[in-house]
Image (tube, rainbow, N blue to C red):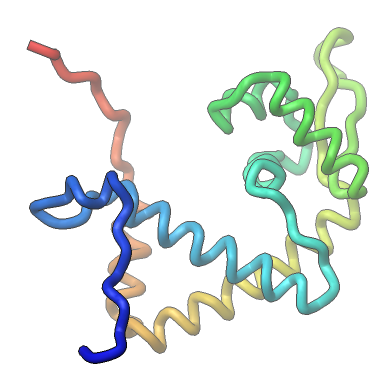
Length: 161
């Protein structure tokens, strides 16, 4: 087409000779949701979270989660988890308190402000799913939900030989 620019592909994507791999497609879909939620919440006056903060925020249990468990869930170091928690505590989205089951451990919990933000984010996610259903069709969105919600099991290592 005259005047259109060719779609740029990353170095990794140029290796996709038989079609795109699922991992990058799932990541792209996740970013679509994350960016949609963040931009719509920003329009409501809610400051955006960094990707690390967003990931951390999504991993905390209402009744509390240890920093070590948050680091494990995120696949990161305890130091990185501590930094993300500190930032979210400063934003009044998380609080850190004692762990009743261990005197040496502390638990991270969402604050009341976090609950409000999560409710707003859920509302936006529903809006985004409605938008996606209009773009792709409700049947395809339901099929995608079923596929992504299935138990995929644990990936097993393969022999190098």
